[in-house]
Amino acid sequence: MHRLVWRWHFYAGLFCLPFVLWLAITGMIYLFKPQLEPWLERQYAHVTHTAAQPPSAQVAAALHAVPGSVLNAYVLPESPEAATRVLLGRGSELIRVFVNPSSLQVLDVVRENDRFMRVIFYLHGELLLGRGGSILVELAASWTILMLLSGLYLWWPRNARLAGALYPRLKHGRRVFWRDLHAVTGLWISLFALFLLLSGLPWTTTWGGTLRCLRQTFATNTAPQDWNTSSASERAQIRQENAPPTSAHTMHGGMSMPGMDMPGMAMDGMSMPVDDAPLDRLVPIAATQHLAPPVLIAPPSQRSPHWTARSDTDDRPRRGEVTFDATTGAVLHQTTFAQKPLLDRIIGYGIAIHEGVLFPPLNQILGVFTALGLITLCTSAAVMWWRRRPAGVLGAPPAVNASLPYVLIGVLVLLGLVLPLFGISMLLVWVIERCFLRRSERACAFLGLT
Image 1 (cartoon, rainbow, N blue to C red):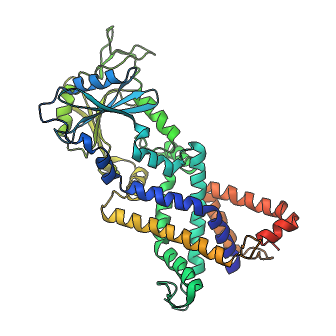
Image 2 (cartoon, rainbow, N blue to C red):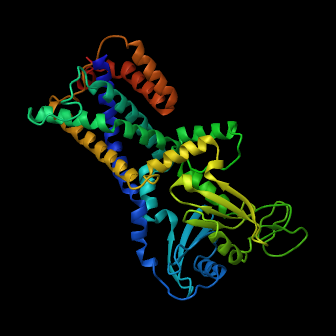
Image 3 (cartoon, rainbow, N blue to C red):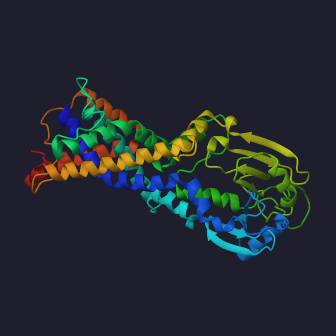
């Protein structure tokens, strides 16, 4: 049993180590988004000391700078001296425009996906490879879960021995030091790492996409999902937000006005741009709703037929949304995190902890501790493997010519059902080994199959 688990642990690590290093480094950078983003945009924190122009004029200046775009959202300024952020949409693209609120000078125009933290986000979740990268990351995460569980079984302290389990032995030579460093680090960080891996699965294409389908099928609440499973689903959502509302009646500032032929209307099966003038009326009202910043004020779209103000804070349990009557400014509906379905709340808490924003700075410290621990695990594993690897072979633990224990089969089947990509890849590895690799003497000798 020990040798079988060791062998699975070895091959899981062989595949996972490059991905674990990559995810640990990019994830550790993303943990500091609350500190890095304000620092990267510090030149826009103090741009004016005079009275601001109306929000609609600021939006008009931004639209003039990006021809062919529409208003996606107006970001409520957090300071009277700061530059106004205006999010513009063009198809499935989102563009951020920085505007001086007093002079209406456009200070900068940048694609949302070109911002530093968004690049890190996609490097972490998709390797900048889109759907294929997301599948690779999900596959690596699934095998890393097996690697951590098998590592806990292999190195769990036995016979009440604490040395080499809870702390490394420093005076027993290099071989024992690297072994203890690997085992002790794994024991201390495994639970944290398992939580990060499991809380990241809802973002993935396959596992997260399946969860999304189940949620839409069985959920009694029709609230929109608050997270995306891939960059493709995010682009589809942005395209929906950028498209004007379609209705059998004319839409003017989010109000239904049948029979009128004027800009801002949408006849049956047709859509027309929405008037941005209600923004001047709604911005002061939205500022009194005590939504957690940043607050995005969005016009009617195919996603929502009314003007809305929503919190886009990274701490998802603090998010909320308010729907307005564009003519009177009255609040039509208000949604808080507590009103979301139970599944959404569980995932919301998991994502907030995953990103290190639920209880800062301790949340960030725990995230850095886990990332550094994973880097240490990868480094020590590579050193141990290189030091013990015989010349000319891979150095895998020798194969066991015996049937798998029922307990191990049950654990692998359970993991394969919960993590479908892991189950499929595990069967594929087994078929390749049995049907192809064992037929080659050279492959058997290199892989330790004899």
